Image 1 (cartoon, helix red, strand yellow):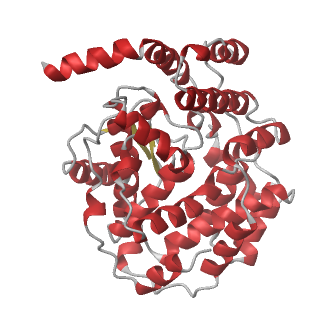
Image 2: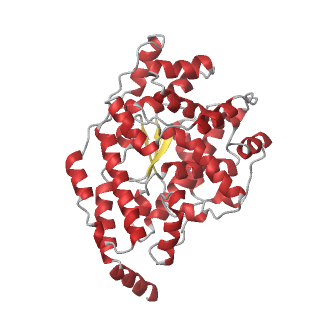
Image 3: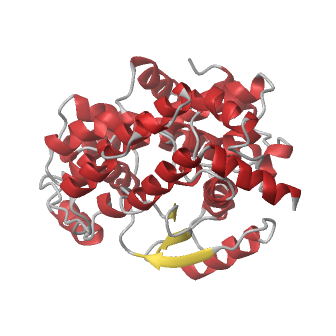
Length: 390
């Protein structure tokens, strides 16, 4: 009863903030970028690209927009932020509006090559020299011997059963559906709170453990923690939250003994593929870099190239490695991880998040990441690499 009275008191005190937050929540739910940027004809175009001896670039088709970009833009910028009296909170919501306005422009220009690429840069940036250096540092290591855990023998149905069993450790529901239109083998849709599994692939035992720690242990944990917060922005996502969220997710793989050198190399190839965009590389050029120069097999090289070139040039993938470096550094310094699991939050906004907690506008987490409680990694090479990323 006392808690309900406190909640009502806070909502009354910050009435204008809650109204603006609710307005933005209704708008943001219409613009999940990943549901638009994943091509509808991946398999068909992959076969055509391979048949052309890697010369004819894929011609991807994308889902149609389900909203009017201009009207949605106008609604975002019609919010009367001057009603938020606290300067820091008002500045946060201004950043939020600019971030999602950029997201609309991104979605609006999917498939329009350079126009989409430059909009993508506003949201995700491009790899720095330090990022590229770190990627090449990882790639100079010899591959580790293959083990049975790396053999892809599990069907999508078996993967579904594995994830359902893994999720029993967590106190939230797991909704799963199969899809043929995703670039990853599995991913979480934040808006629908659903785990998507690619229909036409097989999984290794290590990959299942990796995806479980990554998608369930972090992406769904932060989804459901965000839904418990008074302000909807915690579930919709703070500005530029991808680097923090993916860093947390790959760190969860590390702590849960799922991270391998092969996986770190995959993240490094993604950095180089993203870097190739700013150099003007075509789809075929990027594929040649990853497949012929770095000798990655053609299926994996195609997947990495696709992820970088979809939409017209998508640099999101460059953030996994830099995010891991930042979260690992935080872990080594003994800093709290729970704050970063409160929702789809961003490291750079930690001070304002703590202020929101102090004001009663944010709550402690309901769901913890279970792998963070104990470091199960036994690979000394990974420890050396992570400790020496610049």
